[in-house]
Length: 618
Image (cartoon, helix red, strand yellow):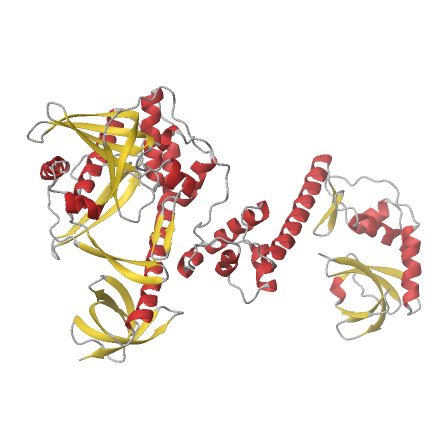
């Protein structure tokens, strides 16, 4: 802010106006130095000021006592400023005082007070004053109200952090948790961040969100630091009813999933009717969820369920993902079914989609089905899956990893769970879900329904005999080399994946009303956020797995021999795949490994950098 005073500096005895910590103050110059003024305040205290901070100085001089300032201030309170209008081009303070014929100290200081105490009416830009019109006055007052509301919110937020109640259902806690998530994801909320640094310098943002209840039962630092939503903001539970015209189909439908699954979103059935009639039934969320309703927005924000060693973060609240929408045994559920008819030699003859209600006979685990897969009930399922695989498999994936190891924390104990990706039941379910997704993609393209297709970019290096495939979302279907289809999408897991939910809503609405919910432009606008969120989810899962791997080694395997395969080096550190789990970690070693495959023992862990300190074993 530029000063209003004449170019010559104040002298001893002048009363001056200036701002200090946002407050307009009056003082009396009692001493001069080479560069600064010593100014006496009404309180009797004195401050050191640079002359450039002075807004206005008196023409007259006064005795160097604080009572002189008080008397002068009282004289201003008794003076009336005549009404005036500032022209649109604005006026300097000198021109304004001249136009109002205010040549006395009391007149000029009274005008300054009036201008500064009426910011809703006047504002200063450079060296000129301007007057707000009625609309500008209204906007200014609204902004002041917003600023005050924000100030009150920040104060209440700080009080809540000091005394967290673990109740994240209040509107204050909800807003604060959402802002903390945004900060962790890279957004800047400067007033909140500044307040947190000032009031809680010892606490991290992730620690604060955990104290507010936005966490799992088991603390997962990488998850907390990611900013991904964890706890659900409580919403009124809606009763979900299928439309009256949806028929009930008396089929024996069963689901197959991991033994610890709680959200079952697909099931299968089989009848013999002049061949085999296979049913693939997917929980029909689309008939209960409207676009842009709170539940849809929750899924859109989360994009996908997270499966971490420390626990599961579902995409939808448990009352929906594990109850209302889950295909639980002995319950009637609405589904979007694909029926595929095969002849006695398991050749596909025809297929069709159907919205219906079915009863789930049983929820099986993969292990249970693998033990029973030679039984008569299961045999046709496996033969159909084998026939489908033979028909579509252009390039068999002979180099795919067969076993994966998932680290899980159960009852406070970490352990690896070995999963056979080539087990009969998993390969069978994989093939049937590919059929379902392929048919949905073909249906969408043949009916010109905008969808979120899953396409593949392939790059092959002939010299290195090396190929890489990158999946991406697009509203235009493309050939999927891994599946061997001209169009492919995801639609079998609407409880767990937002893309599947959207695709199901498009198909369901087309079948029910002959149109689609989302135009292509809206789907295109969704894709950047979906892909960005999926990338953050993948990175968070990797960091979480790495953290819990460190914990597992710390708890169970310190000073024990481990097998490793060298994968990369960087800055004197070694990225190693630890066998047989296939999990990768960074090692700090005193000497480089002599061979790609080597043995080592861990003697310490750098928890800040998540690096294993290890010795080689010859």
